[in-house]
Length: 290
Image (cartoon, rainbow, N blue to C red):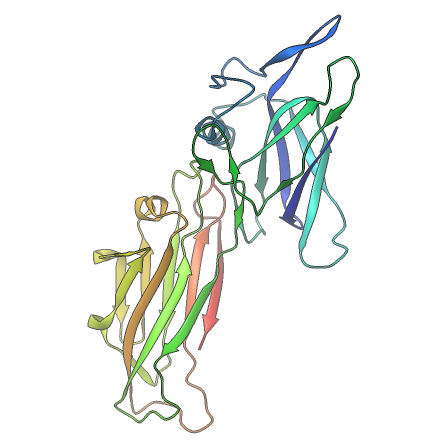
């Protein structure tokens, strides 16, 4: 049966790994069994989110191997939005779908595709609902993310006047989010950096960081200079706050090197983040200027 995963970036590698398969005899389908005795699935017809992410982690790190797998094929990007649908002919059972690639931007978490008989094993009619990479899916336990995260970053001037004089303070805000990492990520790199123009001097003591609703005390994770800062979140903090918003506010003083009139004083914020669970150094970057 053709199974479908929607809204995945063009050029990604999309692979389906079978974890549950049909068990047949001469009369047809008897039920379902694991594809490997090494898989930890308590109820084969109802795998939990914890079980799925644990198996996905094992596939990524190589501790689980020799599972039946199929490479899914991407359709043509007819609307040229950079996303497409991936399909493969899959046998009855459950398949974990993993999205990988060195040039993809988004963070994709494991997806579960079910292929099942509509009536019985004897009529050979199977069905499978499409899975959307942008949606959450819920299994027996807690929510698990089938969805992808497309990280963004936004830098704005807060309460800024149209006219600012040398010696005045300018207030900035950076808004971003930690990608929604699943349990298949054991270590990640999340770095937020900010670079000011020569005409602005950073007030180190003004930097405030909020992750979700909690103030984050960065300590040695924050390195600041007169012209900007770099916040390198420890992996445990990034994973422990997966999916949460990050808001950084600070002030800078306009100095004698500032461009005036119609010349811009350009300031850039950047987010660098891991997007490959098997290699923490595979990262992508997004930025914004004000």
